[in-house]
Image 1 (cartoon, helix red, strand yellow):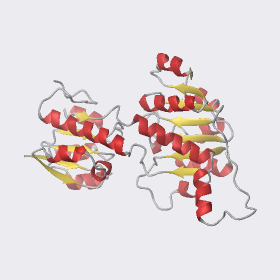
Image 2: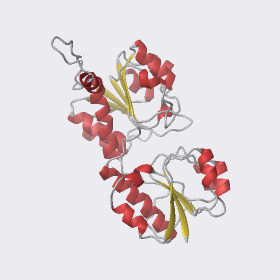
Image 3: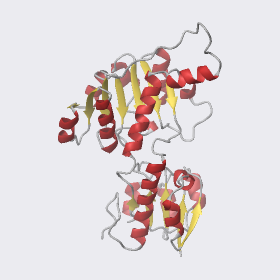
Length: 326
């Protein structure tokens, strides 16, 4: 009998046909509440044929301890930075993933953060709940986003969905991506930038939609923030480590950055005294950008189909590292 470790909480918590699909397999499924640290993964690893994982730390040490039984890693999602893909490839372990399933909902979440900041929605709602709305109260004044320039770094599936919504809101759109889609850009009036700096220098809103890598880690730092427009709003629904946390917090305190909206942090779950929790004009959500009933169903179905088809030597398998060939 195949033995599978399931760690992603949105898979487990969200109703849908993926549960029946999982239960129909002749597998022993061990359920844990991720994301799991390397230490937690080490305590579990060794007796599983596959991981159906979220953002758990699947390091070289975890992979070594999981061999020779581990045959497959099926990622629920598209970000692979928590998995040592290079080492998995060296050990000929397929790393499966789910591109194209969550771009709509993450783009919607991005705009939710943007509107929450520019319209003062979160801060005002909290103040109202605390009893601040009395006669003569000096209410906050927000800003329109119509006519503002949004700069998108990473014009992949999610970045494109953000651009489509930005156009509907009447925003000017500029973007940088090393694999820039000129046809899409022409359709939605997206100006191509030569590099990331051109985006940063010319945007009222900067939205990050790139993968975390050695090149992108810490890409938004004190030096780059100093080059941005005063009062810029920064949005991060990609990875927390793209931004140097202390630098963005300092820029929020000084007013250089007018707002920071993020669905991700540099440590998840965070410490209760995380510096961004007390920073002004900052909205942090708990990595729920892709956690909708519709998106979870698509992600769970794709991740599980990948695994089922892998075990059956089927054709419909989306493999990120090229190890699975059929």
